[in-house]
Image (cartoon, rainbow, N blue to C red; front, top):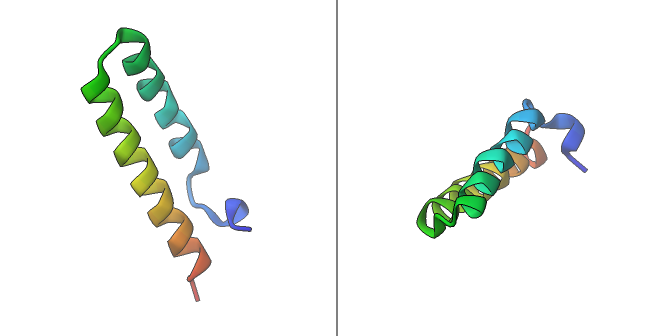
Length: 53
């Protein structure tokens, strides 16, 4: 519904690289924080796109 209205979808996709690297490295704390930041940022972007005038 909003993918075409997200200003920089590639940024959200690219965030997975650092998250996957943290998982591969076994850094649970870093992976958890990166996942939290990613999900909250993507949610914010989707909400902004949904409710934009």
